[in-house]
Image 1 (spheres, helix red, strand yellow):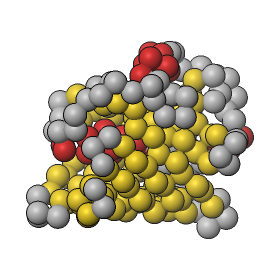
Image 2 (image 1 turned 120 degrees about the vertical axis):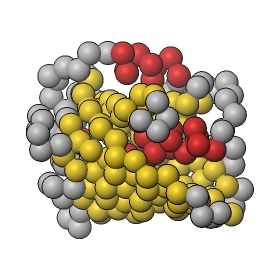
Image 3 (image 1 turned 180 degrees about the horizontal axis):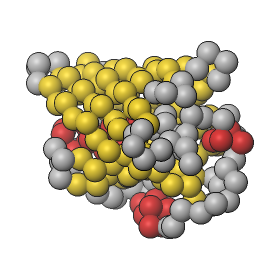
Image 4 (image 1 turned 30 degrees about the vertical axis):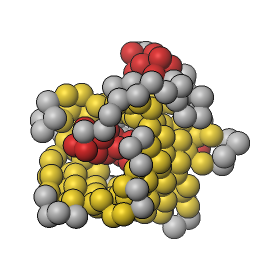
Length: 194
């Protein structure tokens, strides 16, 4: 089974929050997502409920490899190849997990389609902080744009493209209105398991 390849922004948000030492804060969440509801989705078993048609229209991979290059304005660089798995929950959510060797932890993100926003919503959780991204996809041109704002004065703007064979994006990360760094990501299906 294939699952969406675009929610990398949320996983990368978790990486950035960990790298930046973002303080944890109690938040009720974004767009109705709370830390408790996020954790329930992560803990839920994957199911065979048919996906929302918008989610089903994305390139879908249950197992992928994420190549992440995070470059800070001071010249520091973080490079990692990260295995990523995905499952669907209730036909409305895709839950991604990544196993970072660098951070020695599992990081999760959740993707859904928001009919009111006519866009995809992507969430990640760091400590008790929910981060949210909003992605607009042009399926005819195979491009995606994502924006997110989160605790600590961070703003991100990403543009990317996707095909049946890979997804890639470039993200500009700003802190308090100044460029903090860039993130380049390429996701490819893990051919051995898909």
